[in-house]
Length: 283
Length: 340
Ligand SMILES: Nc1ncnc2c1ncn2[C@@H]1O[C@H](COP(=O)(O)OP(=O)(O)OP(=O)(O)O)[C@@H](O)[C@H]1O
Ligand SMILES: [Mg+2]
Image (cartoon, rainbow over all chains, first blue to last red; front, side, top):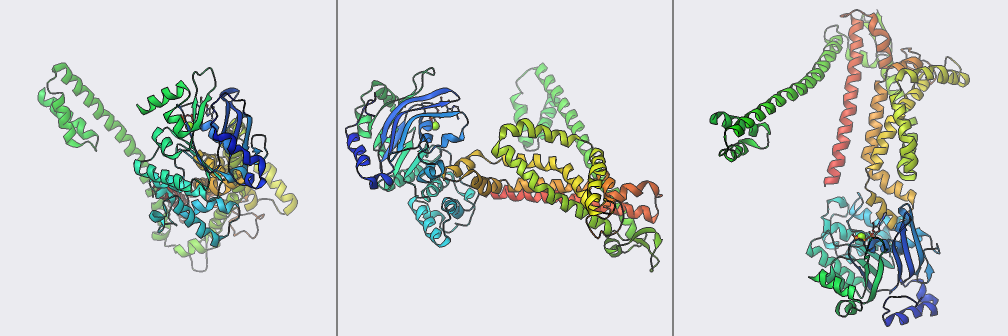
């Protein structure tokens, strides 16, 4: 596991230790360990050799130019890649020590534990309430508990005050920013240990973006976040750890150039390519 | 020439209603400094546009004229039954004896249309009940379960089915279905059941194709979001896809019903054409369409019998308008839901 070419942050060794020690901690931590992960679409390898630790209850940012496989890696973490025909995932992805690639956990259970928010807000054509209640109801949630849960999730996603009087209205009537926060609330309703976010703010105005960042920072510590973003300032603001990915030529698959604590990646990148990318992205 | 050009560019501006005369002036001033050939070209262009406007306008007017005169013609003859021949509409809609050549106790021809109305609605509803599960099942398979098979086999099969003339369905019904019904129900085998089965096969491709379109129009993001919340495929189909596609599915069913309600030939071949209120699904009955096609050629224009047949046609016409209205209402409702 340690035989990887990428930079290992010093904290990594400690963070992986609890997995080996207490079973308790392993159960509900929400930590991912990627070992030599590769993904191919219809036989063509898009990403290869990604090994990293995504720490529990922290925010990890995935950055890199378009097409470098950020979404691909993110979709591996809740097996959403299963939905595309011809996708093959190699290597090991451990969620709290259990390999999810080789089917140590079934995708349905996995997705209850690992929620996802997509780039484009995609609310169901149901009422605001039913959008949130959808996940819990799949598990057979009782209605009196649901009211509380719905409120709780909407509060956490910082949208309760705006919608509390129109819970029965169609969610399609909300603005884009509100819809995205509703999607976050909906994802929270299944009480996931991990929340994956694929460019959650790319369709949003600065104010909505700020509120979502606030939400992430507030919930950090309660659950693990993995966020893909093109916004370097955002990665800097919200994340503890940053992964920089790059696909140098189309002939070769994308790779993980380096990863480490966000401050170190942004202020003192070890790899020249990271420095170049950040300089370009900032300029 | 200069005036002519002004004239023409104004005309071009007026052509598109939302531009108005302001843009017409704008065109005029922008082409103002250009030379004479430019102006001629402009003139020819606007003449072409005017000719185009007249030709397409004429076509549109013709379509409207045909529709209006058709409705007028059917209504005029159909209403003569009541306003000229003095038949009581209540007797027409609720009378259960159809024998227009004879008169009843009140001295009025026996023109009770209830048997045909009941027959038409029965075959329509029953065929609809038969079709819905199959159409929905096939559509779900083709869109959600196996799109490859769906587009490679099911779609072509549906297209083929749609193209088969209704007389072929009637023939198969007559040769296969009627004897089959007879074999277990006794009697002649003609009746509502045979008619409904034939209609069900006939409208199946229409309803299935429209249902497929409805399911396909559900955004993939809905499905992905549902899966991402830990839903299974069937939970996703049931709670999200079918729900989101509901207006389209209802439209598919209503259009299928409209087709079943209006179908004449195939039904006439298997229903038995007895203008009595059917006592069971396997005794001979009649529909509005089957009585119309059977009798229309035999009665002289202007007789009460002929007028009453027009009244049946009017009922058919009104019903098809109702079906179209329902489809529009469904469409408007789903649009307002989405736009909310
Ligand atoms: N469903 C798919 N089928 C085939 N190839 C795919 C699919 N999804 C992604 N790819 C390929 O995988 C590579 C990585 O794509 P991915 O979407 O993960 O990049 P990304 O980093 O998320 O890019 P962006 O920033 O533009 O979202 C690309 O070369 C892309 O062509
Ligand atoms: Mg992406």
